[in-house]
Image (cartoon, rainbow, N blue to C red; front, side):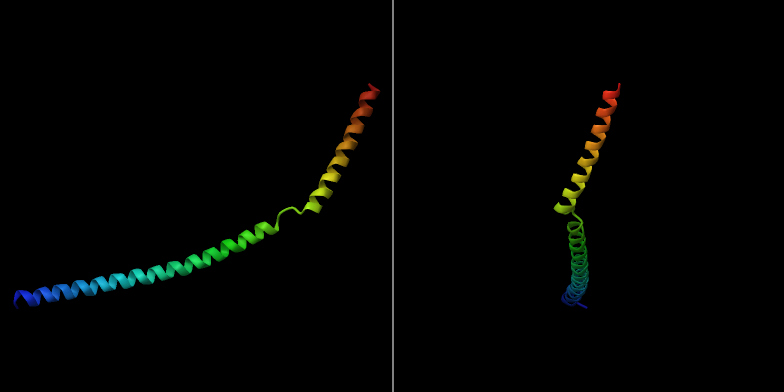
Length: 85
């Protein structure tokens, strides 16, 4: 076997293994892209869920009204106690 045949075999083997590595990297990249799409869909669903759980303006108005009513009652009781002493 002369030098040229050995060189051609070495280049052929290097090309074969290089192609195998590139194919493996390409398949892994595709699987990561699919996983990325799945994760982004999950994050989007979580964002919609969180955005749907904000306190509505009407609920907040009712709550603050009830809270201030209760605070006014407490203030009136404290005023009456203060007047007694």
